[in-house]
Amino acid sequence: MSTTDNTLVTTTAVYLGAVLLVGLPVTAVLSTVLGELAATIGWELAGTWASVGILVISLLVGLQAAVEVAAIQLGGIEALNRGSPRVALIRQLAITASVFATLAAIVWFVLSIVSDQNTVVVALSVLVAGAAIVVLLRGVGAFFDGVRSV
Image (cartoon, rainbow, N blue to C red):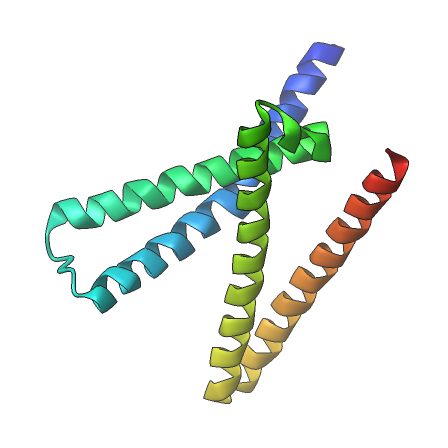
């Protein structure tokens, strides 16, 4: 394989991985949260258009999150600074908000599982939370290494 083919395969793998590992979970969580929020404020989601609207918005946000994560993996943290300063700031705030929302979802998930007292599920949720914390710590470490090198 030539270098161009290797680069294309790597880029494709990174984007597909980002869609599977980031895009789909973000879509699922956001559609659930928006559906619950709509039910809380009294919107009736029995209509097809409201459900489709929530799903489309969730899918667009999930895919955009996957694109941003893939861009960070391929181009480093400076990939967030592409575009105008205002767009870069919005991009950085969106990534920051998604990280905190993911941590909040993990905490909520673990707390809801622990309250059920099912030991197998508790053990699995602790493993998932531990893996998320390891990924978070490695990401923060890589971020600070990148900041120090600039």
